[in-house]
Every structure is written in structure tokens, then in C-alpha cells.
Image (cartoon, rainbow, N blue to C red; front, side, top):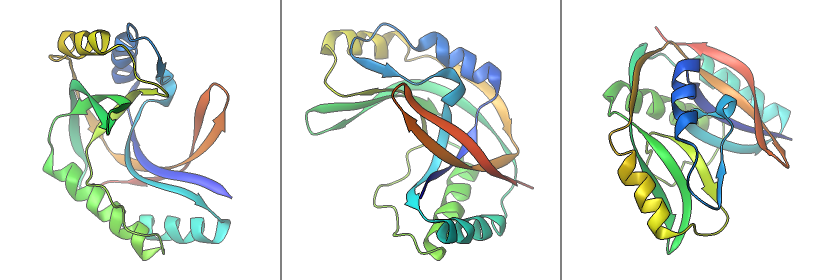
Length: 179
């Protein structure tokens, strides 16, 4: 079985800028700089045959190249539980268009539609338990004006996720050029 997702790679300079943010929040499991990315669609565990169908459908996606910029930070909570600390992406309609095409390709390959609305972000940290609220609030307030980019997006990538004790390691399986 392969654990897959579709995403955008970030240039080294953007990853480095984000890495400088990754400190100061207790109980945060920070994402390694080389693993920072923007996920377009989490696929999950699939067999080789379904992975080939996903690849074939992604090859058919046609979308323009574009520029992106990182902007601000925020959190995702589930009920009263803090889940994720993220860096935001400046709204870009062409990114929404690309994500919709990737979602359509995944559904055509037999995956269930994604139940959540797409929210463009780069995960900086995950939490198994809630961090101190005052420290998290201070982090978000201090980094509210964070900005990096713009940078060029010329392809999207099918990644394989390898889970390990130190977190996930991502392997690019295929790149799909944007026009």
C-alpha cells in the first residue's frame, strides 16, 4: 500500500523563512523544513493499481502556472483541541482552480470526494495535546504580518508519505507541469 497526497513544493528560500518561525510554542511537533509543502489533496492509503489510475488522471490536469505568496499564520482546532499551526497563503483564484481539478482527478480515479473545504496553508506544527493558550496566542500575534514570496509555481507533485518516529518523510513520485 502507498500513502499518497498531491501538493506543491516550496522553494528553499520560502522553506527557510518558514523554518525561522518554527519555535516558541511548547508541545508543538514542528515540521522539518525539507517537508514543508502546500497540500492540494490528501489521498491516503491506496494500492498500486489505484495509484496508477490517480497518476493517469493527474496527467490529464491542465492549469496555468502562477505565483504564490505566504501570508500570516493561524491555527486549526477540532472542538476544544488544537490540531495544527499553519502559515497562510495569499488568496489566489488560480490555486483554487488547480485544487478543484486535482480533486476532480482524484474522484475520477475512484476516491471519495474530500469532505472538507479546501483551505490553502502550509502546516508548521501539529499537536497531540493543547499547547499553553497564552504562548500560542502570542506566537500567532507576533507572526500575523509574516510574508514570504511571491514564488513561481510551475508544477504540482504526487508525493508518497513514509511515516516514521521523527515524523513523515515525503518522496516525490511524479511531477505534473503547469502551462
